[in-house]
Length: 269
Length: 172
Image (cartoon, rainbow over all chains, first blue to last red; front, side, top):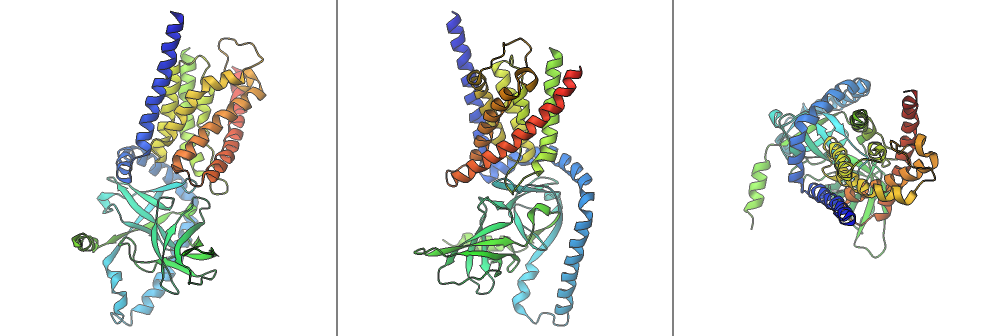
C-alpha cells in the first residue's frame, strides 16, 4: 500500500511537470501574431509599470537625449536650407512625401537576448499600426509587431528572426541584414554577390524594397568583409551607427501608400 | 508556518521586482545576463510539497515572462529545475544530519553544499532557458557558452544575496 501510494505520488509529480512544460512550450512556439496578442493582453498592466519606472530613470538620460536632439536638429536644418531654394526640382526625392513620422519614447528595451524586443509608449490610439518601421536619427531600430491601446511592441533589429533588406550605398547592390545574436554593436550583411569588393567603412542603407522603411536611411558601415572561397555569396560584418543600448526617442514611420502597394502585390498571381 | 509562507511570498515579489526592473537591464559583453529570480526556487524549503514546488516555480517563471515579453521561456526553464530539484538534492547529499526546518542555505548546510547545489540548478535553468530562446540547434556552442557565463554571473549574485539575507535571519 505504501509503495502504491508512493508510486502514485511520484507519477503525479511527473504528470504535473509535463503539463506545465506543455503549457510553457505552447507559449514559446507561438508565431509573431499570437505572441503579440499574448503580450498585448499583458501590456495594459506591465506597460503602466514600465512607463512609471521609465519616468524615473528618464532623468538620468536627459542630457544625452538633449544632445542627440540638438545634433539631429542641426542635421534637419541643414537639409532644409539646402532643399528650400529648389522646391520640386528633384523628382527622385518625391518618395519622401509618402512617409509620416510619429515620435515615441522607448520604455523598455533589451539587447542581451537572442530575440530582442522594445516597448514604445504609443499605441493604436496614437496612430501606430502593425508592420510600421521604427528608426532613430542614426539608423533603423525594428518593426512594429504588436499594438495595444497605448503601447506597441517592436521586434528589434537585434533579433535573430529579423531580416531587413539592405543596400550597399556605393554600388546599390542588395543584401540581407541579419543579426547573429552575438554582439549588439554588429550585424551581418549576407547574400553579397562574390564579384563585389567591399571596403571597411562602406555605408549600408535601407533598400526601400520592404515598404516598411523609406529608401536610403544609413544605419551601419562595413567593419569586416568575409570572403569565403567557392561560395556564391559573401558576408560582411556591419557596425551599426546607433547604439541600441541607449535608445531613448524613436520615430515610427507611417507609409501612406502601404495599402496601395499591398493591393498591387496581392493582385499579382 | 505562516511565517515561512509569508517569507517566500515576499521573496517572490522582491525577486521579481529586482529581476524585471534592474537585472533585466544588466548584461556583460553583450550577452551575459543574470537571472537572480531562480534564488526563489533554490531557497524553497525542503518540505515543500511536489505540486507546490512545481507550481510556484512555474509561476515565478511566468511572472518574469510576462514582464520580459518572453512568453513561456522562463516558465519552462523554471518548471524544469523545480522538477530536477529533489533529484539534485538527493544526488549531492549532505554530511550533516537532516533536521526539520532546515533550509537549503549556506547557514544550514554549509558553503560547499550550497554552491554545488546552486551551480547545478542554475546551470540546468540557464541552459534550458537559452536553448528555448534560440529554439534551434545551429550555434549550439554559442548557446552553451552564454549559459555557462551567465550561470557564473547568477551564481555570484546568489551567493552575495545569501550572505546579505542570512545575516538578517540570524539576528531574529
